[in-house]
Length: 135
Image (cartoon, rainbow, N blue to C red; front, side, top):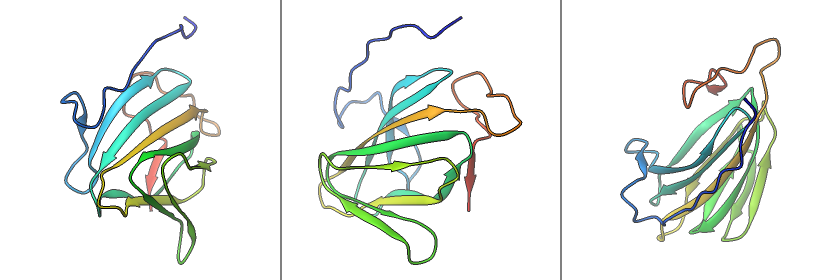
């Protein structure tokens, strides 16, 4: 069945519906997840973030809604410090990570297009994608 039109909203960082991602990763509020797209808002306190990793099945972008984020790559690669209403695009296979660098909690929008990894069908279901590799 093709994807359908879906309306969604983000009720804010204080909403209890956010999913706990662990002590170092903050929380995540799922907006959309289907066979072709993923969209979440991640909420992180200063020092929390995502470790260096890559996706072999996603092109995505991130946009800071509140707070500040530092994006980094392998070695000394520094992609930038992003402030509200600034974003970054991460093509698949790009190793990247980011962290909250502000006293104000980071609220960052993630939008990713799901693409099958080369030679592999895209798994169905909400979670469990083999498309994430931590490096």
